[in-house]
Length: 172
Image (cartoon, rainbow, N blue to C red; front, side):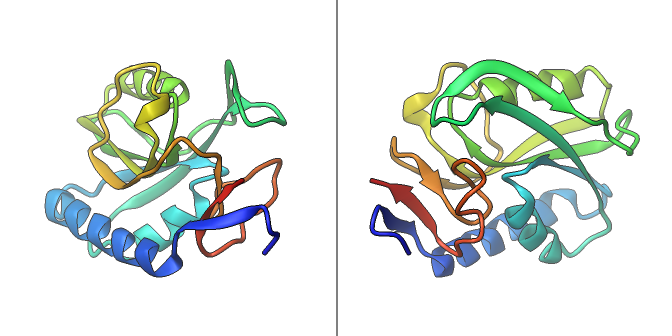
């Protein structure tokens, strides 16, 4: 691991949090056949681990959103790439995010998905960075609160690097 990276949350802690979140979601959605929508690219590792632990019928789909350029700050412009292949209307939807930072991108997408008339919408996020929030956002299932550091690992990147790290690290 490069010297500029420091472990913030170990893979053991992540594993326990994913198990806890899966238990909570299973309890709340057991008979609802939810649609989990992963926000690419960052959520793919978390979502893969999460769905393997959900003990119930479910469906999975993905959407790609971006508000970061090649730096560490959001550019504020949100782009949606592609479209869902799944029916949303009347479904119980759980949006799965890697990290909620300013909340602007997630808030935008939650408004968008609610416009498609689901039965319900919940948000599951591995990491929450409330110190950077620019809009109110309710996280129904949260793995960790993280400090105001730029984090990478476990699917979360910096310029497409570090997604493969098993731990969540921060860049010094």
